[in-house]
Amino acid sequence: MFTGIVEECGEVADYKPVETGAELRVKSSFSGEVTLGESVAVNGACLTVTDVSDGAMRFDLLHETLRLTNLGELQKSSPVNLERSLRIGDRLSGHFVQGHVDTCVEVKSYERNGQDHRLEVALPREFAPLVVHKGSICVNGISLTVAELNEDSIVIWIIPHTHEITSLKAVTTGSRVNLEFDLLAKHIARLTKAGS
Image 1 (cartoon, rainbow, N blue to C red):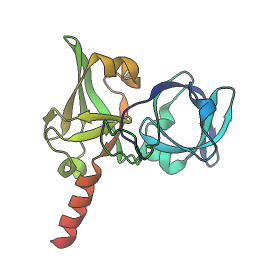
Image 2 (image 1 turned 90 degrees about the vertical axis):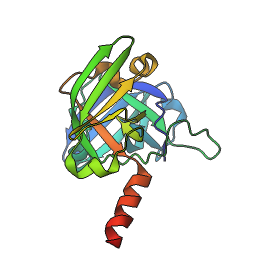
Image 3 (image 1 turned 30 degrees about the vertical axis):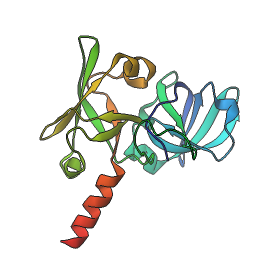
Image 4 (image 1 turned 180 degrees about the horizontal axis):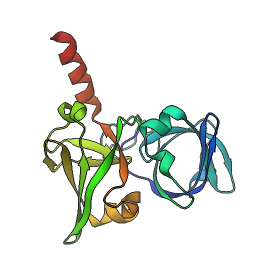
C-alpha cells in the first residue's frame, strides 16, 4: 500500500530485456535502506526489490507488468518516481494507492500555464465511471486531483513543486503515463455491477 506522495525521483541505472520480461536497476538515495523482498512503487507500479548493489535497486519485470505500464519504455538515465510502502502510523498525505496500474495512456498535452502546468491525459471509455471531478487519481505514482473531466480525457493542474521533484519534468505531449484509479471507486463499481 502506498500514498501517491513521491519520496524521490530516482534514475534508471540499467534496463535489460530478458526472456521472462526485463531487469530494471534504479539508483536512489535510499537504496542502502531497503531489504530484499521489499515493495517499492516505481512510476506507480508496485515492484519487489530482488537485489541491491552499487547504490541501485534491481527489480524483475514480468511481461504482464510491461504490457500494462510504461516501464518497458524506460532507458538508462530515465527519471522514475519512487515511493516505499506505507508503514502503520505514517501520515496519509495523498490517497490509498495499491501500486496496481490499471492502464497506461497517452499524454494529450503537458504545457506550462503561468507558474503551473496543465496536464491532459486520455481517459479510456471503460475507466470513465471510476473518475469524478475533484476526485483522486494516481499518475505515474503521484496522487493528484482531477480538475476537469471530459468525455475522453481528464485534466490535472500540476504545481511547480510537483513538476520539479517528480518524473513529470520529463513528460511531453505524446508520452505515456501509468494510471491507477481510486480503490473505493473500483469496489463501488464492482458492487453496483454485481447488484444490477
